[in-house]
Length: 309
Image (cartoon, rainbow, N blue to C red):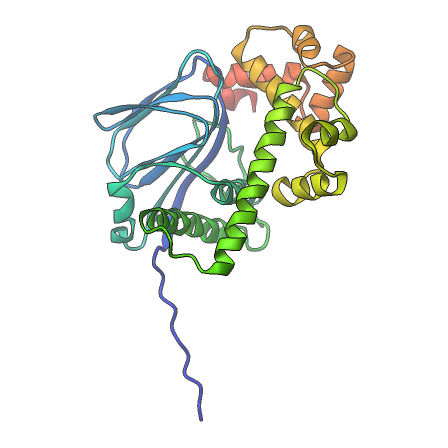
């Protein structure tokens, strides 16, 4: 008896990556637009943006993702109110026919697993490319020499998985009732966990202007301490207090980009005990002081990003 190896076929195979970016924009930014002969998608991680896709003009909100097919003109601008966070990735496939699904359906509201895959792609890109991922004027992304072992492959694998997951999820929605009993149980637990997570995150968002303890969170949300910590560790990779601290700093970054409050006002609005403590926490999380972050964003908006880098 001899074994016969099976050649595994690829349903979707990414050939080249042209760009992977994560932008934190001012509330008045505008990109005039372009077209190119490869695929691109834009994902709104925070805020809202107005997008031109061919002849269409769309409003994308938090969690929305839109594909631009090759040679489609596309442009994007902020709505003037919110300061958006955007991920943009562009690529081409070995067989472009495998992307036919995304020609028919270009807009999605992504789920938690898909968001995690995008976060992984960004993390691997930081290991892979010798450039900042928030440089909007960069057309060629130089590779690090050497890069982290497996980083390029991890980008490709996670991007392929992301595309396959979108297609499979769309198929499940089109054909409900196909889950096995075990899958149904897992799905119910997943939904319950996600609902609990969303409820607690909404609670934290409502308390961004104050100091909350784990005991207070547990009491107000009727959840045990160990269950709460496990939920955030498993789903977010952080303890809940660390997660809350990151939420505050992300809110501060958005306030800085909307340019309506000074640092002292932002510090007070977010419940920090002093401007000095706020500045220390901001630098601990972002690697920059609030002043350095504001200068970096201003330079990017004015087109002097490369000079200040």
